[in-house]
Image 1 (tube, rainbow, N blue to C red):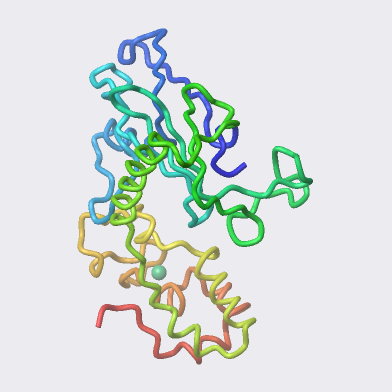
Image 2 (image 1 turned 90 degrees about the horizontal axis):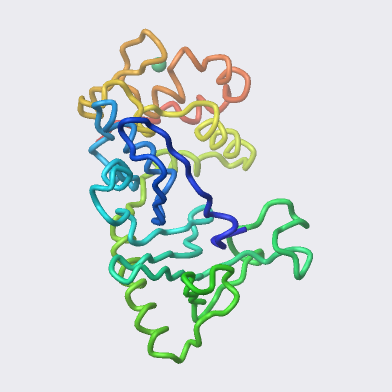
Length: 268
Ligand SMILES: [Zn+2]
């Protein structure tokens, strides 16, 4: 469904007698990402501080202590592609949405991707809107009538949203993939595939997901929690040494170990 309202927007219902006021309707957009920050705070914890967390603490909004969601702008992605941005104006309360990219529905004229089952995010599976489509969701909730692109209002609203996008982009940092040079050593694409799959699915680095129990320690001192080796939890340990993954390594990975013998993910 891409960034269209029916695909991304659902009501949320919360009940907490004595803490949240009953029978209250809050018409402000929040995000599922907020659950993480909210629950962490309620539990007396804190989300990891070494990265930007997009979720916000919902409690002030839910308890009526603030009038607006912390998400004045919401960024709707399909994979790594920004498809749409919603702007709920804090003062006028008007909701605007701009679409940069939307999926090509199949069959033609349908409201979803029945042909391919899942909508694509890029390339020939989408429509790139140049100039972008802008809707006033407050009076056009079904996104039927885009504003004329030559109107002052279109330009004014789009400019504000573009500024928010630039600000948002400045918070995104490419994560260095230390395995990349080693992937290039593997001439057989199948080997590269095995290694990538293993990296992405067979294990997950707790250190990367922010769930490591030793988050209070510097990264280089956090130890693997999945084996008793007292080894630093890094790519090299997981890929080549952690006994927890020896079976998967022996099945899929044996001949790659030689190629990767000088692999190290430690900071130089
Ligand atoms: Zn280990």
